[in-house]
Image (cartoon, rainbow, N blue to C red; front, top):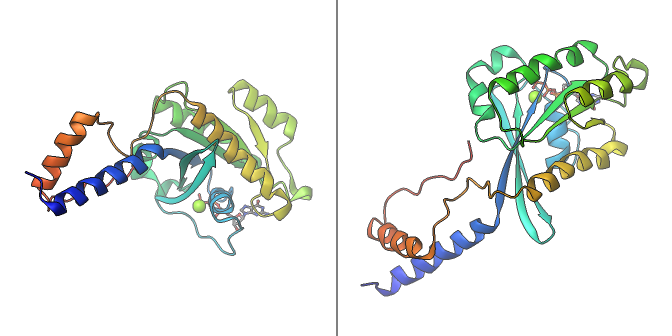
Length: 231
Ligand SMILES: Nc1nc2c(ncn2[C@@H]2O[C@H](COP(=O)(O)OP(=O)(O)OP(=O)(O)O)[C@@H](O)[C@H]2O)c(=O)[nH]1
Ligand SMILES: [Mg+2]
């Protein structure tokens, strides 16, 4: 028998459910050598500016941005991973779990960071992501025009060999901000167009389950609600 307050809680649960139901969350991991600019790129896209100072990422940093694409609200959850081996070793399987897209980043002014790309791709392959998880290759720091060590031609050949689109950009140069935006927006459109509902935020109940869920959750009222963290 539902009393007055349970009805309002039920409708609250319903509204939360219905809001969450529309917002798909996509996990995008950003991978590459230390110092290539992964933190700055994610900061530029999510925060709209170049961070004054960054430190080496330890483990992983999360940055999110909610987007409106063709009337659907989706959330991109960027996992800014550590490039330094000592700061990432116990985290790697968390990086790749339930990932929806992978962004590989190298520093255009550091040939070694590009030459390490096969190792990063191997790491990704070892986590047997399904073939339909999009991967893109990003050359960062194109603003350092007189220090470029990786030519577009060389990078394009590598990208073609691995069936990835190549983007060359700069997290630092404000005039490149639209390009950084375009990189992640291209990915967002691709993920959104993806047929399967990949949302991890909430399981999909049908209406009868919902009713049962309502009664059960009200009955247990104090039970801690499980977080819908996608990790
Ligand atoms: N010139 C230039 N410098 C950049 C750019 N992006 C990042 N940097 C600089 O490169 C250095 C490293 O940037 P981060 O974003 O911290 O590098 P990271 O890949 O996150 O490094 P880890 O966290 O150690 O993996 C910092 O000094 C940044 O200011 C860029 O587009 N152009
Ligand atoms: Mg970092």
